[in-house]
Image 1: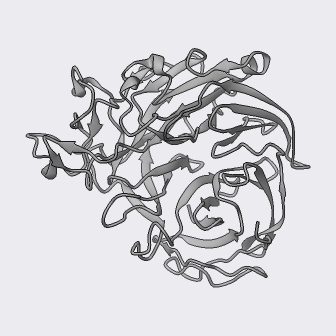
Image 2 (image 1 turned 90 degrees about the vertical axis):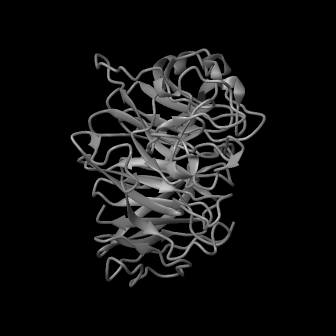
Image 3 (image 1 turned 180 degrees about the horizontal axis):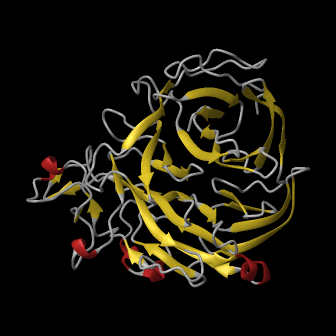
Amino acid sequence: MAPFTPFAALAALASVAVAQTCSGVNQRFQPRMGSGYKVSLLATGLQQPRHIVVDTAGNLLVAEGNSGTVQRLVLQEQGDIVCVASKSAVTTDRSTNHGISLSADGKTLFTSNLASVTAYNYDATTGKATDGKVIVTGMSNTGTHPTRAILVSKSDPDTIVVARGSNGNIDTSTTQTSSGRSMIRTFSISEGLTSVHQYTTGGELLGWGLRNIVGMGEDPLGGIWSVENSMDDVKLNGKDVHNENPAEKLNYHGILKEGASNKLKGANFGYPSCVPAWDTDLLGVANIKVGDLFKPDGTPAASDCASRQTGTVHFHSHTAPLDVKFNKNGTAAYIAFHGSWNRRPADGYRVMRVDFQDGKPVEPPTSKTAAIPVMENPSTSSCPGSCFRPVGLDFDAKGRLFVSSDSTGEVYVVYGA
C-alpha cells in the first residue's frame, strides 16, 4: 500500500474543483461540479474504497475492497476544509469487500463479504471493533456479483437489510424465491447474535426480482430505497438494443418500522423475465413508456410484466448506480453512478441528485431528467480506465457528503449537498 497522506481542498467556485490543499497530497482528477456545489479531496492512497459510513464521533469508516479491512479516517477541521489527522485499520478480518453499516446508536459495526454479514462491537472514541460475530450466512455465488449491500434501519433499529445479486447476467433460477438470489431480505440483529441466520430461509423477504442491488438508503420517514444494476447485452426480437436499454432504477420498498403498513413488502420487481425500458423508440414497442417492463430475448417466460413492480425513478442504461443516501431533511437522494463497462460511448462516472417532496421523487417514473448533476468527470473519453468512479456515499452531522472512488483510491467531500 502506498504511504497515506492527508489532503483536502475547497473550490473557489461551484464549477471549479480545488483551490486550497492540506499538505502532502496532489489532486489527480479535477471533478466538474454542479451548480451550488464545491468539493475537496479528503484522502488518497486507499485500497479500493467501497461503501463508507460516518461514525458518531464524526470520523469516516471505509470498507476497502482490496485489503478486506475497514479503515478509520480521523477527521479534523482546518478552517473551512476537512483534513485527515490519522488513518488506521478498525478490523483485523480481511474479507470485507463492499458493505458497511452502523447500528442506530453507533455501537455496532456491520460488514459484509461474499458469504456473510458480521457484527462487531464498535467504540467510536477509540476506533476499535471487537468480538466479530457472523449473523447472516449462506450467500456465496459461484458466478458474478460478489458484493452484498447492507443497511441498518434507523426507524427499526433491530433490523438489518441485506441484498444479494444474481449468479450471472440472466439467472433463470431467480424466478423462484427459493434460489435466495436477486432479492433483499431483512433480519433481526438480536436474533442473529444468538443464532446465525441462513440467508435463503431466514428473516423476511422485502423484495425480489432485483438483478443486482449494490446500494441501499433510508429516507427520514423510514422508507427503504435501493439502486439496481439492470441486465447487460439485451436483445429484443433479435435486435441488439443493449446500448440504450434497459434502464437502471431507484426502487422503493416501503417502511420497515413495526406497525407501519407496507404494501410493497415481498414485491416482485420483474427480473429475470422483465426489465425496464429507457430508449423506447429503439425498442419499437407500441405505447411503451420509460420504466415500463418488457421481456428481452432469452429470458424466462413472464405471465404479465405489467403486473410486476417497476422503479420509482429510472436512469440511463449501464450507468451502474452503486449507492443512494438522503440528505437530513429528505429533500434529495444522492446517487453514485460507477459507470458503464460495455457501453459505447461510456456513460456514468458521476454523482447525481434526485429531488424529493413529501417522501416522493418530484419527477415521475417516466422522466429522463430526474437526475441532476452534482459531481462528474469533465470528460468520459478516458473512462472507465482512467477516471474517478464513485461508489460509496454518506453524510456527516454538518450535511457534508462524503464520496468514495474505488478506481482512484480516493475519498472526496462535497459541500452544499
